Length: 175
Figure 1 (cartoon, one colour):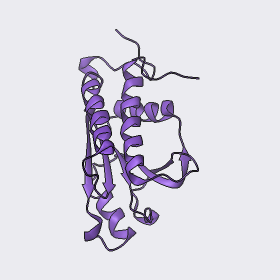
Figure 2 (tube, rainbow, N blue to C red):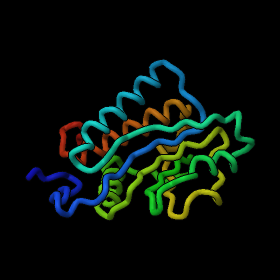
Figure 3 (cartoon, helix red, strand yellow):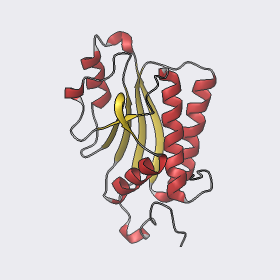
């Protein structure tokens, strides 16, 4: 049995349902380097996550032209979530979390039988907080402001990094 940094995956008889990891974002990334990076990290996370109960890792984009304000954007982002889903809402005032903490949170959710880990990236005006699902974690990648395309790449990389930590690969280095 391989020991994992975030705890070993239970034996087959005790496995919980697989956790689907998804990025939901307002706006579309057309072909280019950001699109390539997002697809690469999500593909890697899906391949590596199969054996540890995470995946597939995917992305869903919503057209902002059909949404009139941040309330409509938040509603469409948080629509059709599985009951009890683990939700991270990217927000400039959110909590900064280490990669290890994100990984441990996802591993704990997996072990508790959560079916979805969803990362919400709102539009230019952010989220309507009162419409976010109860228990959503506000997550920030520091105090700086980043372009939405880059944030999506960063979230995809963090999903891959979280899966890598759970799988015990040498991708992540502490310290």
